[in-house]
Image (cartoon, rainbow, N blue to C red):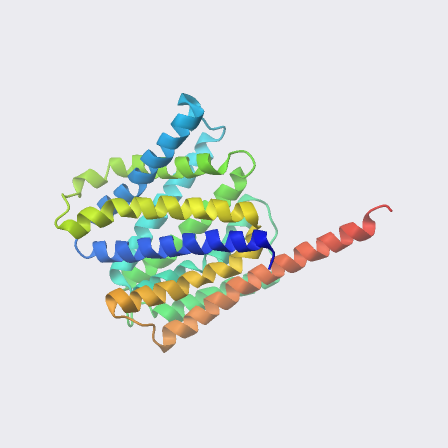
Length: 299
């Protein structure tokens, strides 16, 4: 394995561990602390950290953007996705909520066709169908788990997929740190009007420690992802993202004494299969296009 890929995977796995740790901390806090207030802190901390760094390095115009409407929509979809996901964490075991989030790569195909004018293949629609079947199998909404948890998890994956497509739309026009700042700042701004009404002072050392750490985990996780994609492309790294399911399973067992049952594992396999199939198809198309380009190139 070439050194660049090793560096990329090192950053990627560090980011995955940070995100999975943030999710486990959020699930623990959701049992005793208002969700909206916790999400507010999660976005407020990186806004201050990243904003402070950008201000020191770029001056007062660090927040300027050429696409304010798209940036605003990105921030709203991201914070709404987090609210839905942490609501799902309150109602669902950690690994089941994490499993549903991985339907995202398949949903991205739909939004890409609508917003970016990318034409999905028939195979992608089959992958989307299989992925949703996996969600239904894993969650059995209305049978084994409260329906609101299943709906919240699916809504979170859908909103996050829209956020990713909007981010892709801005790629090349805005740098990574500016994208990170705007997404967090808009989320913090939106919740500043809602969260204070439900917030309360932390009780006990654990809440005092974990609440600000949510923002730290999120900031460092995104930073690690940015560094990972500096060393390798998205198609190369995407299959390794599924390691987060293993970490979520481990944390679910370690902190909440919960392991996935047979239905969850079957649904997980369907979702993993659909996502990996989309990645495989994308790689094949890219390789085919490259081969045709080589054939057509003049000698």
